[in-house]
Length: 100
Ligand code: HEC
Image (tube, rainbow, N blue to C red):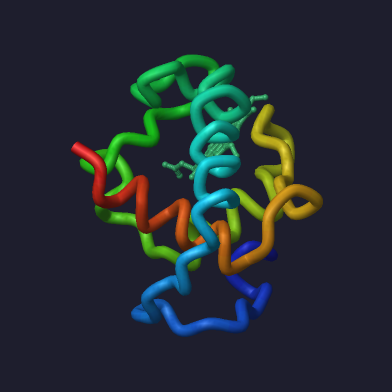
């Protein structure tokens, strides 16, 4: 339940401020290579679960952002807090939710 208790400093409905274009490219690369190594190159799932929009649709932005920043205990999902800010993570989540 710790996941739910951690207060995130943004509102669920907030639209993420876009990272600058160079950083967007880095984050997209990270998604393909780092996240893709577990979640599959097309993010359909592998060792990690599917990150396709249809499979994330019923989960809240906060829940997903929190999973990415903090990782999931007792699973292979590592915390990404050292590599991206909360705002960048929200941007990434919104990108995942928009993809086909
Ligand atoms: C070392 C393997 C690994 C890497 C690398 C990894 N993940 Fe995961 N991820 C997992 C596993 C395993 C789960 C499922 C955890 C569980 O069973 O609850 C998961 C779960 C998730 C979830 C929750 C999905 C859901 O339906 O609740 C999200 C979102 C996610 N990962 C995003 C990412 C992102 C974004 C990256 C790259 C920045 C990433 N992951 C990199 C292994 C990984």
